[in-house]
Length: 132
Length: 86
Image (cartoon, rainbow over all chains, first blue to last red; front, side, top):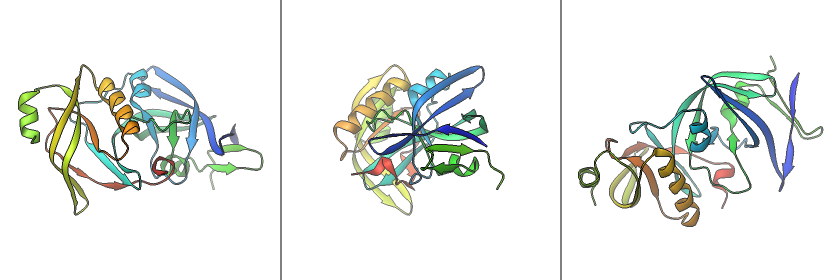
C-alpha cells in the first residue's frame, strides 16, 4: 500500500504531488483533494514549468457551476505521481487557478478513481494504486 | 464587438476578453459579443490576467484566448466541488 500524508488546512484536505513531462518535473506541496470535482486542474504556470504551453487552437471548455463560468483547457501530462503510485498519460485541466487558500492544484475524481485512491481521515493518509 | 472584428483588429495575439453578450443553448456556450480587456505577449500572461480578473469580478465572464482561435462556440460542462463554492 502506497500512501502519502494528508494535511488538513482550513478544514480542507491537501496532499503533495509530482508531475512529469518529457525530462521536466514539478513538485507541488499543496494539492486539494476534491471529490466534488470531476476533473483535476493545474495552473498555466505549473504547465509552463513542464515546458507545456498552450496553443492558440487548444479547445476552451466553459465549466458552468454556481460560481458562474470558468474557462479551462485540457492537456495531457506524461506522468502524475501520488507518493509511489504513478498515473501515465494523464489528461488534466489547465486554468487560471486562483481560488485562494494556497491551492496549487486540484485532484478530482478522474485521477482519484483511476488510481483507486482511499482517503483515510482516521490516519490522515491518501493511499493509491490498489487493485480492488 | 463581434469576434471577427476583434480578430481583424488584433491579429495573432493573446488577449483577455470580456463577454458582453452570450447564450447557453443545447449544451453549448455561444458568445455573440465581447470587449477586449488587454493584449499579452504569451499565453501564460493572458491566463494570469484571467485569474486576477476572475477573482476581482467573479460575476463577470472573461476568456483568455488567442485571436487565431476559431468560432466562440464551446461545449459546456458542469462543474461543482470546491471551485464552485459561493
